[in-house]
Length: 109
Image 1: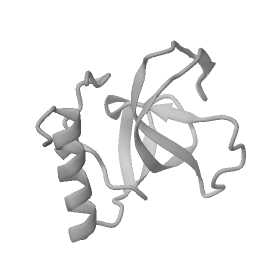
Image 2: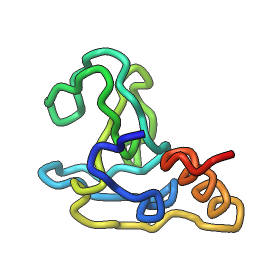
Image 3: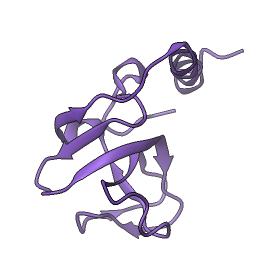
């Protein structure tokens, strides 16, 4: 699976991390990894995303939360300006990312 931005799974921020995106005034909380666009959509920053594009993260506005479930906020790792809060990590989340890495890199069973 080709990942837009070529971010390695091991470099993904934990779910729940709060980040500032380059060029945007708001902060966002990461809630999902690797979203594949199924139809052309307009992104939060006004840019268009084409079908088949894969984004590293799906997020919600922070502290607002998921105020518009019909509109996805998608971005890639390289657009993160800084991390305001590093999300929760435990054995379960580490195992999840290990499994995701196997799936993304074709090393699964």
